[in-house]
Image (cartoon, rainbow, N blue to C red; front, side):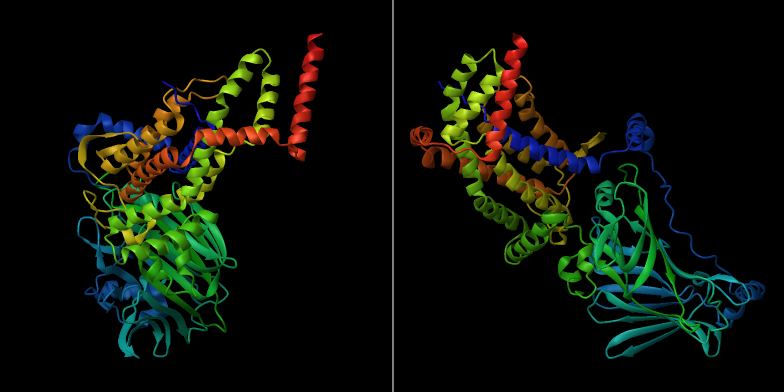
Length: 617
């Protein structure tokens, strides 16, 4: 029985893809603190089983005063000076449409609750982006009598009206009958975007315009997903600055940056975003991101804490800043409606050509399929069509294997003939490849061509809003991992659950590698143990994908099954080894012209061979 031969090129291709996997997961590797925390967790399982109180606390609210205490009110007005003209009140105002609910407090004039009306968390709680003091917004400025104030401490007087079918809420912190600082909110029907204007009237001489005025916005991302670490992996501060460049703060660690000519700042909480945009661009912004997640836990309430400090300028002693608030889903169909702002650029499609493929090929293609097919079936159909589109590449790869297999006896003969002269063996082998018209690297090209597809899909499934909370078979959310069994303990790098789709995908890729590399895989000098790699890759994928989107594992499972089928068809019905052998023999008879690179390589090898002979004399 003929032994299956080793196709080094396919192995190299797999190693390259595996290398990309390692690189992507390296970005999310656990820190030493996380490893230490994991060890402590395993040692204290009994303690952790008891109810825990998370250490995370919401952003402190501004100091409250007892409005029924006349002395306290007098002290408050004395502290804030001219702005004590506004009547203190703890009431709130509400803006809402069919999509979003906003609640604005008289204290600070800021949004204290932002709730999505059409979306829920994994445990059926409405999605809140702002709640219970997790966010703060205020202007920091100096008055002409040298009082340093923050609008979070000021009371605003509300006025709710309607304009052209839009709800308009004005909040005024008054320093006199016709002197005030105003926040103006305008909400349109069926729209997540809210017009937001900050302006002043008659404050020239009340506010010290020679001192900086700073807009401070902070927000702690509220947990929405069953896995806080998984959600935190896609929670990120993004901003548009300096001519439309999109920049990001670190996902895995604390980070800070200074942006110039900033169009918008996005505090993205995986599938939902809180965005502040300016109609004429902020001159600059100091941005911070603090990671709050150290380990997987059911009690962690927040993912990251974001902050933006933005200097504002006064014109003629008055302030006028026209902005937008966006509280809504990180959905391409929603964000692309605001084309002039470019908010859709805040979605993490990936970098370079990978992001382009994700954004302009897979995202619209999947949206089209899922518009008339069940979401899981749409993934299967998309997988089939992608694999069929890539079948010419698969054919080229398998053809390369067949050619190398035909040449194997001659290569083995050269190995025996020059077993004591590795340099001469390499020269003669390269000559044989050249005469036969075979490139030993041709098997790597198909793998390289598939890399953009691989990475684009790696980013598509965890970040596609269209997959959020969409069930298929045993998976209740294709954008998150599926669970067929919960473990009473946590395995490092694997988790506390068992996902079935990654198991199926790992089995499929194992059989695929068995077909392409063969069962007899001798270790060659200077080469890694390929049999070990064949077993290691499916195992590594099993661990990595256990905590990733089940839609991604479903894709790779179906993709590998289809690829195996295509290869069986190519092997049994398309390729003819005798015809390939005859073609190679014909190629050997044809004169082979060397290009400059081939000639240079041959000359270098011949020189090395001559030097070796001289050294032996």
